[in-house]
Length: 261
Image (cartoon, rainbow, N blue to C red; front, side, top):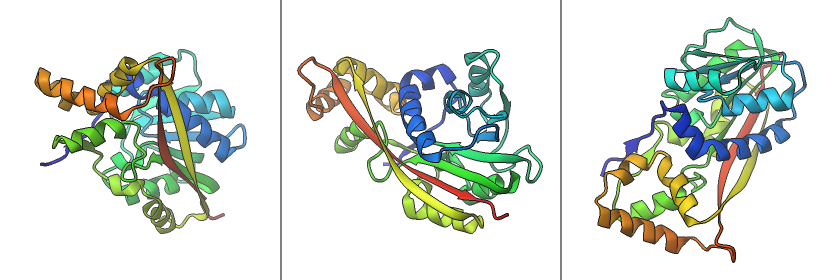
């Protein structure tokens, strides 16, 4: 059965389902990156601005430009933090609206697997970064089971149901990322693994997050009996704590490299 594709146009829906995971992984990523202050950043595929806000709040940037192809996501990003120094515009990761060597850091946060041509996307980031600047990214280890909604998708697969994969999912893997950064001519390339976990008040809160993400359309299209079966299978998979809370984890790969001086 063909796997469905993931797309995001609703910033509020993304925030409800994935905001917590974006922030958790983003915090660890920035701890690892340890960027200098007063740098000029571009956040490629900024979505609803969740990670862009972390850059503003954590990194004391001189400027931040968020780029995303979705008008709905850009609208949400602009409204989420009025007065922020972050600026947002619609744009294409394969044709960034910046001149050569014009920013200090280019980042893709949980995005590279959505880019139709990841090699061109990384090359575009390298193009707009100044010599000595950083090109960096972190991405869920989707094929290795690190996606936040993997528990649900594993049960869906077991039931013969279609699940969603990004169009360039192979680019999320360690060896593929290293090859992309090497192909772009970046140096001092380093990688790290990010593992985060989130605790939900109870199984119902966990189920709401899982079905609010990219699997929502598949789950919503099930008849009541099939949906109940899926929910029960997922419930059996998770082990609640004594207080009824449910904890789940996710894993991502982080990579950084410098443009040669």
